Length: 293
Image 1: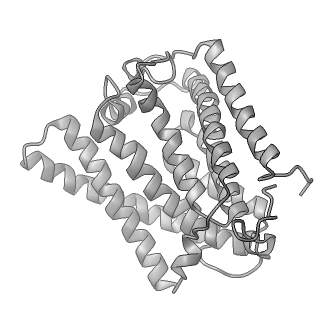
Image 2 (image 1 turned 180 degrees about the horizontal axis):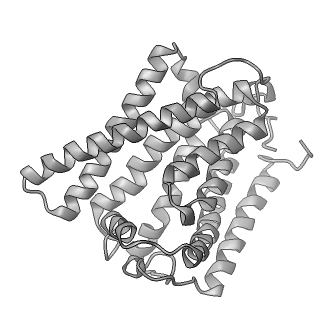
């Protein structure tokens, strides 16, 4: 469990884990309803924006990326704004921000980096079991591009996706869940909905694991910043490696997206080692304690 010894930088356990049972918005079924509204909004806005960019003469590849980014910002923003407004939610509680100790951030980056490598290999395994359709391959090719160096792709994946998804799942949803359910249920429920929103079988377990970690960090720190930064860093790692001239089969060679390629064993071991280093930093710095809670 994340330590709460530093009152100036970390929340009290009472604030981080409120007593469940309070009928705050949203509950699980209300959150599912919000996701259905979001899905329809995304479809509508992507249809409109794709036509707009086509009329403006934007190339098909760039139009797809721009359409995704603009539609996501509008649709997620609209759903969150209406939910906060209609339910008179405290914006500071929905999106809590706290100053956290340096040891937390020093541990977060290697934890996310190591987990990113391991979850990528898990995705590869599921792609071997559940074959990707040509339509899905085309979507991923548009999103990541053949070289992985499309800056519109980077903005969509590193900025837009974390900003919109964390605001909804670790912001609006988790804020309601933590007041209705025990912490473990709140974490699992928000992670499950986060994974379900991806709507792809080979991208289900990995988002659950990442979503559970991010939700745990938000509850344990009383701040949404770890989720935002952790999600963005997770998505940025493949691009940062490409910029550094380091392309790994099965991880960030986006031209291989239509075939299943497993990562080298040494790379998986490296990811495990980096993850353990991050956890060790947290333990040594006292940010987290193994206390059985």
